[in-house]
Length: 132
Image (tube, rainbow, N blue to C red; front, side, top):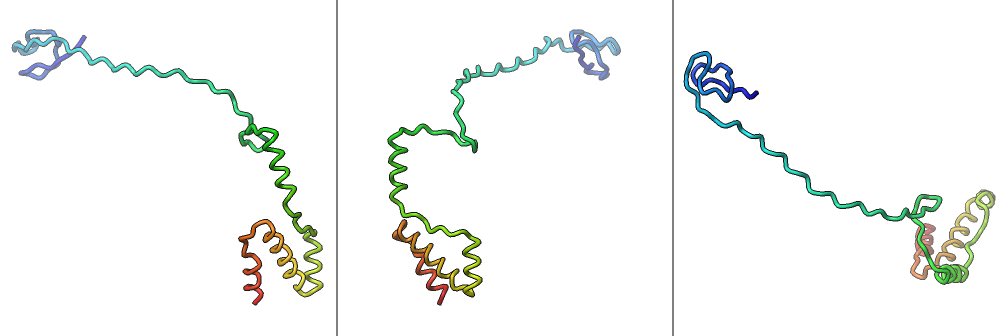
């Protein structure tokens, strides 16, 4: 049951009452106010299910490459020169025994290897500047 307040005395009365039960003053007859209906939400589109992607051991998506792409990559990798390989402990030992000279020589060996792979590399120039 809805309630309203009297115009004259301000006491709470029935909203459909034509007169106040406390002071007897005539009240404006109002039709009950209908509450506005809540808007209906728009329909949600159906969720498309996509197949689960395969992930590698690091959690990255696996891409499907053809056998030809892999063979071409392997052939290109085989054409690159092998990097200089010397265990770090031997490099340290030879550097200490030669009072640091072997360390600089090893840097130049690595810089020349980089130059074979990337013709635009300026590693050798930077090493000469550092040496001077």
